[in-house]
Image 1 (cartoon, rainbow, N blue to C red):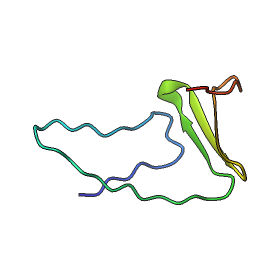
Image 2 (image 1 turned 180 degrees about the vertical axis):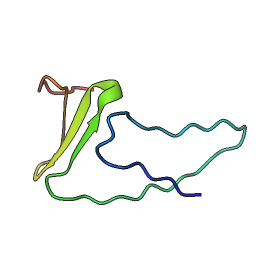
Image 3 (image 1 turned 30 degrees about the vertical axis):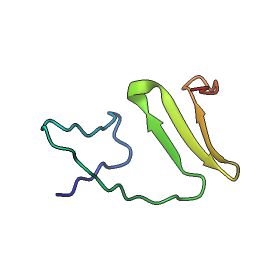
Image 4 (image 1 turned 60 degrees about the vertical axis):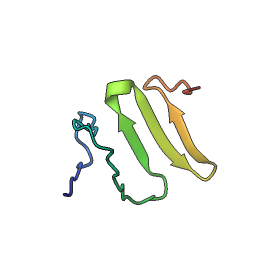
Length: 65
C-alpha cells in the first residue's frame, strides 16, 4: 500500500494502526535545503537550517520539548 500526503494541505496527517498486529512502515522523503514543515494540529513549525532542524511555535517561540 502507498499513501501520499500532499504539501500545502492545512490539515495535519497521521497513521493509525487499528489492528492487533505490529505494523512496520517505511517513510520516504527528501531533505530539501531550507525545507519547512508545518504541523497545524499541534502548533509546531520545523525549519531546516545549516545547524539542523529548528522547532518553533506559530508565534515564533522555540519549542523546548
